[in-house]
Length: 279
Image (cartoon, rainbow, N blue to C red; front, side, top):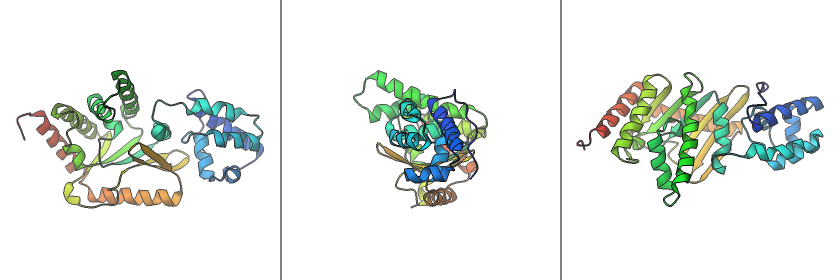
């Protein structure tokens, strides 16, 4: 497999660990597969650690220190690299998302986080944390908006979202919030920043009915799949498993409206929300 791209160690503790791991492994003459064997992980997983797309956990750091003779370097530093503003079940996925070159997402329940407005995100977090202090909600919203800055770049990452029609119809935060949220999504589609497809109600059953799916591609590292449920989430890197999820995404997209039809529908629903007197 191709080696990971060079990292700037000053960008984050995780990037530093990745760069140092690559240096230490190559210094000992081990391949990624050879280092992965005693850890009971794949060579692809080691490559993801080195490229910064996966987080190094303490159990692996301790074993890597022993294997590579790095005198506790990775054990000491992996704790700092693990700190995140995101929930534990999503933190690693958010870190991978930030360095992905392509993101494909099936969104059956909500507008994808990267496409949300502040008001929409605030309504979602308040619904999920009904008794939380306002300061807690503010922190969650700020982290969500910081993630959404990925789409501020005019070209990278390439983002492709398949959004269920129910997402358009569910009034999160009220009609005014939905009008703004869908207008924002439509604007991103109109500027060709995002590829949008809507999966209509009449598409019927499909392979991704049970939950959301995100596929992330990287330069010099294997594809990752992220699956999320209620308060849970996991990254998958097994090639056969990821290939199955790729097929799932492709079949869902094949059942969805074309990008042109989808954009027209999103704009139409946004206009309906903007006019309070319309049913």
